[in-house]
Image 1 (tube, rainbow, N blue to C red):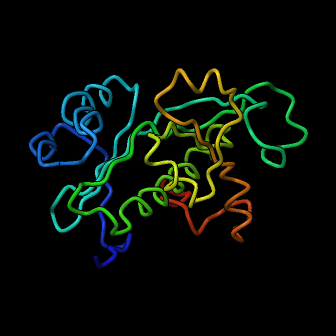
Image 2: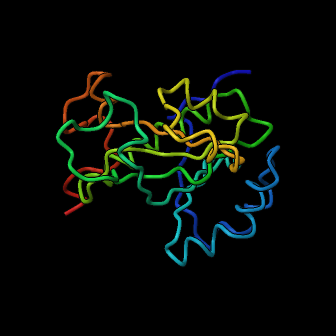
Amino acid sequence: MTPIGIEELQFLVLTDEHRSLLPTFKCKNNELRGFLIENALDSQRDKTASTRLVIYNGRLVGYFTLVTDVIKKKEIVDGDGEPTFQYSNYPALKIARLATHQDYENRHIGRSMLKKIYTIWIEFSHYIGCRIITVDAKPEAVGFYEKFAFHKALIGIRKLQKRDTVPLYIDIRKELEHLGYDHSLTEYEETGRAERN
């Protein structure tokens, strides 16, 4: 399968105008498809979640949904976070859902969605303190996130046994700096500063 580059994709904030497009999305996980078709617009209107659609050549090939979150300081590995941080919880941006159309799997759509989420985090972090990105991954998706430097949260085995997902996180500020970006990370920004003011 030929990879699809991020520059070939459109990322659109979900609106009522997209309602007829939503049933065209097919994926192997019925819960992810069901949320998009039945709940995403209501969550968008209620401001409880924000969904972006990924469009390739006019076709809906993926989507992701973001919400706010926190992660306990004791749940992140040594070396992540800020050594002088005095509080028990880090503020976080959560990937509540991320799915690729089943006909477009293994074409780097997921990778591009993560990169877009990083740009959103950078924009978000100009206004609100936010250090970490979290995700409760389905077991079959853990390997995907681990390829992009997500770590398993340090949660006890007993708590994990009660869940059907695996809590993961990335110290995104640390990771982007490790990749060679400075504190402003302007190369990744979604919009210019003039547009934010």
